[in-house]
Length: 241
Image (cartoon, rainbow, N blue to C red; front, side, top):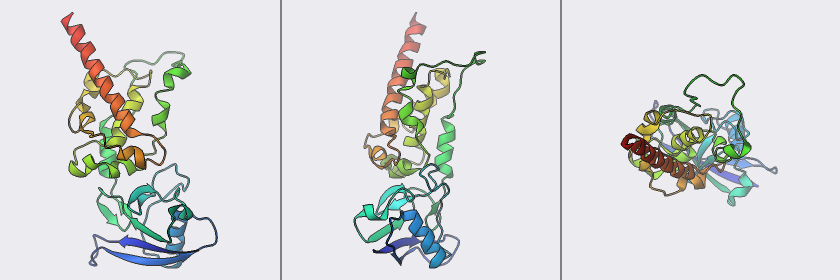
């Protein structure tokens, strides 16, 4: 089968303005979009820039917009697209560095702001933390996030307000707050209780639709909001007593 890849080429450091360029690609085998890109680069245009690493949907590096929808190039099979024309663009909402490569630093800056690690709030127990399986049930759905940026790119709030932390960072925060080993005090995570944090989500659910690992970040944000309300109520109640 023959495919036509229409790829948005751009180089902010160069003179030519951004423009689409077509590449013909033929294969009789089942190939992913990433495999096709690698062959196009090796056989047709060595200047084509794109990012990848593991090629197994673990690292999230190869996220691009495929036919207008954010997704992983390594996980998207050509035959699943249902059309011989493949439109590839860099992830929207990010600064383009070259071709399909974008600057992910704002995404990871938001991620770092939520302190994405377990904070036990003291010395760990001598024999470690023993956790029941049922206690981790609410955590497991959010562990699979690979920080690919697809949800961040698809979020309409991010596109309007660059200060918004984004669905990946907020869902990852809930992953740790829901972990029974985390004991961080309210004042450590209440700064996300703002319009650029947990309350900025408009519940459009685009993040859930595009997540390649079915993490459902919007569900994590909703759960985070509930935790914020409960914790503030309990704190108010304790102060009144």
